[in-house]
Length: 273
Ligand SMILES: C[S@@+](CC[C@H](N)C(=O)[O-])C[C@H]1O[C@@H](n2cnc3c(N)ncnc32)[C@H](O)[C@@H]1O
Image (cartoon, rainbow, N blue to C red; front, side):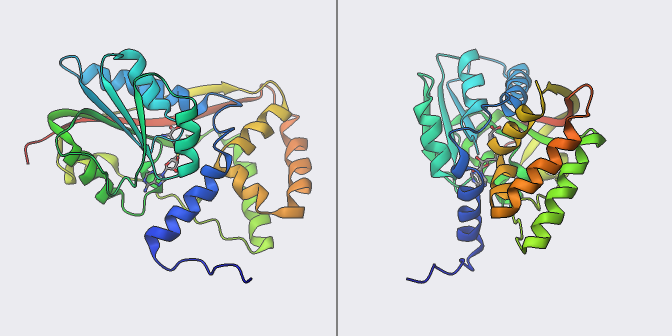
């Protein structure tokens, strides 16, 4: 039987790519190092700072394993928290690891199966840049948030220059192998303009730098494998082992073996529609 040709429908192609990049390693995602969980925890604080009363419903969109949903649920255990993600693999992994009050649904951020005005707060951590249409997703985030409800978004900025070598190495090897990484082509977003156009107001935006420490080069490699870059490395087939050896030889000399990651946060309130 011939393998199915890749879909030409952008939504379907995106879904297949996300399933491969994230669903495929959902069981190890963010387990080697609490990278996304640390960022989500900070975002949960920023959302909490803008809530004016105890929330009843909280929504984490493109939740992955539900890092933000768990962080919000821990702060507001009486609220009903919904975690949604496009990848079924991620939803299954998240549900298997569920906090008592978190409900998991598979859904496209651009077409949320949630009632309008349901949420007191809605968050999207380190995912907006991946969507086919971030603007359409923001309109959905606005639709499901009650007027005056809170939006919280985080996006990855640059990490310190010394780690740039690996992206360069990986891109070179992917090119050589003829692999085109669609999800790696994430577009940086002008967040304040994007959320204002989607119907949010009173935007507050700030940046912070987080430092993550690797125990040794094997720990770093385990971390690479556990996130979406791992999917790209595996796509190299036989080329993955030499890439690993070359990368470990570089990282072995890093002292300290730390990663400084800049992150942009934004909170806003849902305007009247
Ligand atoms: C970088 S991960 C972040 C996951 C999670 N927010 C976290 O911080 O751990 C990006 C997530 O976005 C999800 N995703 C990508 N496109 C999506 C879409 N259109 N709708 C919903 N989820 C999507 C992926 O499946 C993946 O789980």
